[in-house]
Image (cartoon, rainbow, N blue to C red; front, side, top):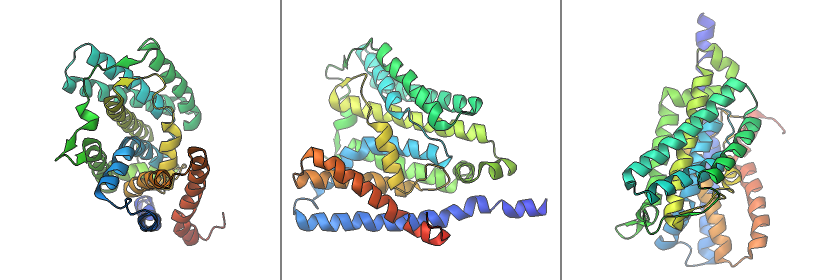
Length: 329
């Protein structure tokens, strides 16, 4: 009994040092990118451009936080894009029916939370690998995204534009405030609460977490619920900006959210990564895209360069952990 209680702290301590090392390396990459681009283009390091990058990345950032929280527990969520499209259709139809903005926000976020919890229950009860399970669920939500609006785009007709386009003090876009606020809340939850520590414990060593008395199924299901909620909230910003919902909306999100999370130091196997790292991973992707646009790099070359930078950034951000473990690969 005594030896078991001595082993439990290892579940909550080892990840902190490794993750801090990754965040430091990633912060260095972000700062280096900012300094380099400020020399290459004088317009880069301006207040307007900084808020432009943050605004552009806010939707990806919010969705990525949800995906990252699931990944902390070792759960891959490939449904984020199609949950986004499905909840976008629900929100757009509700707005078209005359429902007030407040109730639409509540309905949409509740639907996203429900979809996420359903994902978690299916993954836990079926005991299928999370990649395979959410790949199948992805197809189901893709069908729902087509069935709910009957395969059509749903136009908002001028409603709800404020949610994703309004600027506080005429400078700070609301989506930036959403993104930063959610980042702070998610950091507090994952860093300072028992729930957050349980997620890392499950992702780091699920067997040890189970022996420590952690309810694996409940916490994984809650992690998926958070991912679904974040996807739904993202859908509200997207439809507000474009003025409509489309069945194909969010198709790029599964790949981009996982890429941003991995760049931020999150491990696909779980138990590793931090919310500040995820935030910087999202920002780094935005800086890369913004830099390539400013330098007028053709879009088809941008894909190659972006992929190369992702590989380099992940390698450097994980370098400290690799050195510490002494593992060659």
